[in-house]
Length: 122
Length: 109
Image 1 (cartoon, chains in turn red, brown):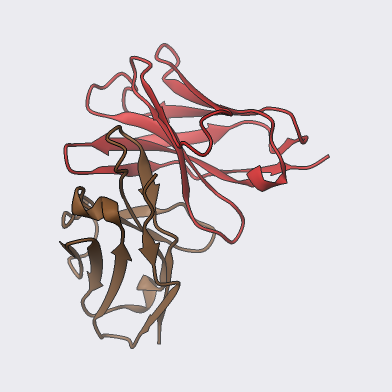
Image 2 (image 1 turned 30 degrees about the horizontal axis):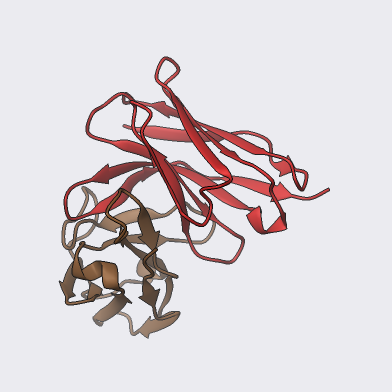
């Protein structure tokens, strides 16, 4: 059974960089069939897609966050990571890592981590 | 980037049928997928690529689409179906960007 687990600091100061990792177990992050990505949810609000990465390192980002986001992959550790720079209180959210699957007509997240709450505050 | 619009709230009587809709230009080119989220939990995929159910999802959940509108139908809603539902699709940008709808809170009466 595939499992994803987010890890990282739960508190980040304004203007600093948020860093999270997602460890994948029960499957290989190097599978050619899937991408790996991040989705966030501010408290009481809806889901916002952040971006996705292929095991080869190809990335796709939400245009509204692109200037501040970096997603990377470490196939040796079966992990991928998120960095979000220059954070403000508006970046306070539960951050989910998720496996993505794409075909010509669709793109969706079929396995999700439990989520990690990151609060931006001094 | 594309936007997907959902009604903020919908209600249904126990055992009845309810349809939750999602509208957006990207749905003319791409299929919607749907997620169920209960309080304090991660979202769960219930329908992918228009009308496919992952293993373990009851067959009372189904999806459809027409033009720029996708729908999630729950036939014979159960109390445990009370949750937030989100649609998503690929973005019209042509790359692998994805967009989510704002979510619909389903209340089972």
